[in-house]
Image 1 (spheres, rainbow, N blue to C red):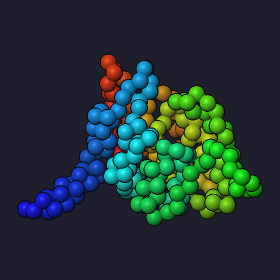
Image 2 (cartoon, rainbow, N blue to C red):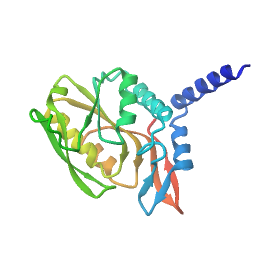
Image 3 (cartoon, rainbow, N blue to C red):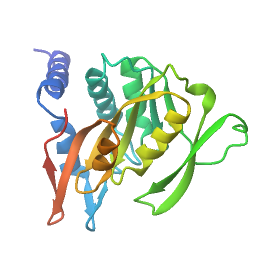
Image 4 (cartoon, rainbow, N blue to C red):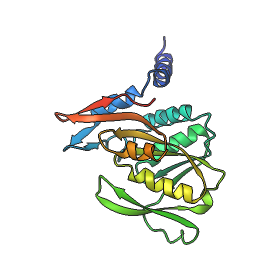
Length: 216
């Protein structure tokens, strides 16, 4: 078997295991390998998600979300800048729909028809006003929210506010890494929004991540 044939076979096998293995073990393995636990509740993943981006991993994350929601009639994928953009873009590509990201910074070209919400960042400890141009969301849209982290649920809550103000429907919230020891999932599910997380962090123990069973 040639090297190219082996690489193709290995790649095909890896992709299949994502869908039938119960969770994205590759993502969990990458978190264990390259993630850094800071203090009691911060996980730093800047080598592949929040600063430097591993596009191969993001592409597979997008495929997993797309497989999960392929029959849901999704018409838009929505995220918030900046670290949610990569997984959201690949999910949108796999679903063959547009991706919209809510902007945090003011933009002089966005001067009318703007939908806004206040969002508190757990990591940065600041509140930002995020915005989406209303022309990109309609009452006919079924939206999948995709974000990098779920902690206290405030980012997703802000996006939901904007989406529903436009009259669109939020189908679900897709999360790459969920901090299950915080209350974000409960906040969203109690409000009636399904949460689908690819990696769920149960706790940090002696500087290491302990996972709980992921949603897919």
